[in-house]
Every structure is written in structure tokens, then in C-alpha cells.
Image 1 (cartoon, rainbow, N blue to C red):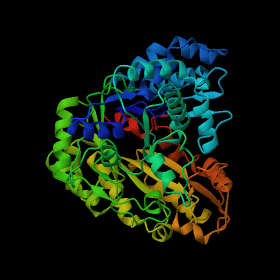
Image 2 (image 1 turned 90 degrees about the horizontal axis):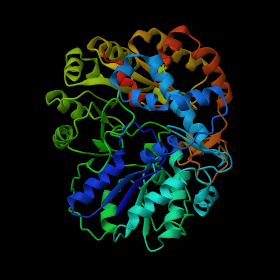
Image 3 (image 1 turned 60 degrees about the vertical axis):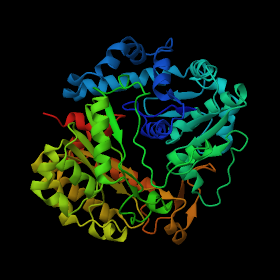
Image 4 (image 1 turned 45 degrees about the vertical axis):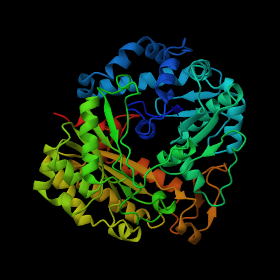
Length: 504
């Protein structure tokens, strides 16, 4: 079997979903190959003859080898300005590499002037005309080499982000035309969300043999005729991935200690809306996995991918440090107000915690069922600061429970705690199309596409998206304390590289 991670997604670390599938196949002795087409395709585009017609593009092309090397050097992460220039110049080379194809590739994005990943008809068109994809000269040759090497029955693609969809379907179209006997399996986070849409009908039956929703290890093994024992655990396998080729100052090890969310109560949350169950890996098994993976891969950073790292796993890491710096999402809770506990997390290697605060207004938090107390959030931020753990804070604006008055309270809370906030992510609310709460609002088409995961709605307080954006641009982001925090965020890679900038 061939497992493929299609372009385009952040090339800072290997694809965790593919590694988990590889681990399941390896555990059952199923032969497989892994292709990180995102990474290999990136370097193919960067190596093409340039189409530079302006000063910036010519300068970026000339400095490309140096900029790629610099993102793999720890010294670069001691100068944010140097880092930003390298990232933006590499992105510029990619942007012009699409030529006249209509595509605009990027380090973490892929857009097309005429085709949208939100329209199934456009994805089918991408499959019908794979030669129009800028990656085509590379993937047609690469796939032909791999698929001609020996007997193979299945090809699986892991599709997690919209930025991967058009390229994934171009690859599917090529495989379907050139290797019609192969079975094509499509899974990943984006596919799971498609299949949870109300009234879902598969528009890809002519291209894809099997769509898989949710964790793919058991469904994939079942397709291959392998019997899985109840409760069987599969540790990820990164042995088939090019660990030294990613754009980071060393290997970043992704690991997921759970699927779903253990809180799972927040209004409008996609996890809640899609009714995704919570399945944790027992903390002692997760620690064993991590210890073994760290010993085998020698990472410079451990990235915990959980929607929220459970208190049990954090306590286990504090008791048995992984031997490498780590970061991940955590819920704001009473445990993080305990300085001794946070200092133990710091000693275990915790460099940064991502915190989904969402709002600085208690009423909004209560109505969204976030289960967060602002006084506690204040203590958490101060305690993490004292313990030396960076806080990457996520804020959400424009929910139905918020108006400008509440948004200004968020601004007040943020500025009052600016010295304890290392990084900020500011997002504008999207209403999930499968949300139970959507029934209470007047809705309208949000995106022109049958695969859109969100719907437009009439805000009950007139706090519409355009008004929210003006507030963010003219008020929130321009506050000196907020502006200073936003300037520290690594462009493109954001939280994936942020912890490298927290070290002394």
C-alpha cells in the first residue's frame, strides 16, 4: 500500500496521520510505502526555473538556498527579523512558481484563480486535468516510479486541510487514469468533516473507492482484510519519513495522546457539532510511546497534537519527562494556577502551552459553555509566566454571544495581561454548518460551494464579520500592547515554530 501526504501544508514536521497509519500497518506486517508529497513537491517547485519579473522575486530566488538552510539552523531563531525574511522570501519563490497554471502555491497554502476546494465540481475538474497542476511534472514521474515497482492494491491519501484538496484530487486523477486497477482510499480531518455535513452525498464515487471518516487505522486495516483486536493501540511510525528534510531547526516529533476533546461542551465547536467521540491513549502508554519515539528519532521538539492535552497526560509528563522540549494545547483550569505544578511542567520540558481563551468577557464564556473562569484565566497566565512557560493565547471574535462591548472587554483583558501573553491568534467566528445551534439563526450562503463547512448567519446583535474585522484592524491590533505581541508571531508557521523563540 502507498500512503500519501499531498501538498500543501506547513512543511515544519512530518504528517502525524500518515505516521499513525504506518504504525498500524507495520504492527500487522502489511507492506507499505510512504510519500510525503507535500515536502517533496515543495522542493520540486523551489527547484524549478523561476518566473521572477520583479526585484523581490529575483532577490528571493537568488537567496533561496541560503534561506532554506537558515530555517534549519537554530541560530536563525535568535533573530525574528532574519527568520521573517527567510520565510517570506521562500514563500515568494513559491508564489511565482505556479507560472501560468492559475495556481498560487505557498509554504502553507495552495490557491487557484478559478477552482475552489469548496466545490466538488472543481475538485473533480482538478482530477480530470491533473496536467494543469504545477506539481504534475513531479508527481506524475514520482508516482509512476513507486507504483511500477511492484504489486500494490491500495493508495491512501490523507486530506486534512483545504489547502491540500486541489492537489490531492489532481494526484487522484492521475492515479485513476494511469493505474485504473488500484483502489483509492481518501481519509483525514477534512474528509471526516465533509462526511459529517447534513445531507452528505458522496460526489466522488467515480474517483475514490473508499472515503474514511475519523481515525483511519481500523477502517484501513479492515479494507486490507486484517482483523484488529478490540482496543488495540498503534504507536506512530516515522521511520519511512525524511526526518532531516523539514523546514525546522531539527526534527519535530508530532504525537497525539487522544482523538476528540475531553471537554466537548463548547457551543459551535466543530468537535461538538460533528459529534466526535473522545478516545484517549492511556497516559502510561502515551508516555511509553513518547519515550520510545524520542529515543528513535532524536527530536529537538515534541508537538502534542491533542485538541487539549489531558491533565492525566500532563501529570504523567511532569512525573516522567520526555527528555525534549514540548508544547501543545491545554485547557485553562485550576491545575495551571499551581506554581509548583507549572514548575514541574517546565522542568519536564514544557516550553509553551496554547490556550483557547476565546473571550475576555465572562458572560460570553458562560453562554458559549467554555467552562472558563476569567479570574482563573488571569491566575493561569500569571503562573505560567512565573514558571517560565510561554502562553500562546487564542481569541475568537464575532460569536453570536458577543457584541462590540464584549469585544472591548477582551481587549481590556488582553492588555492587562500583555506581559504574560507570549503570542496571540485572533480569529473571526465561522458558524459550523452541522452545528445544532445553527437552527436558531437566520442563515445564508457563506461560501459558494457544496463542500463548505460553514454557513453565514444574521448576527443577533449586528456584530457582523465586516464590522468585527474593522474593529480588529482599527482598534484591537493597533493597541500598542497587542501590536507588540502580534509582531512576535512567526509568519506562516505560527505556533509550529513559536516555541523556538521562547528559549533564552
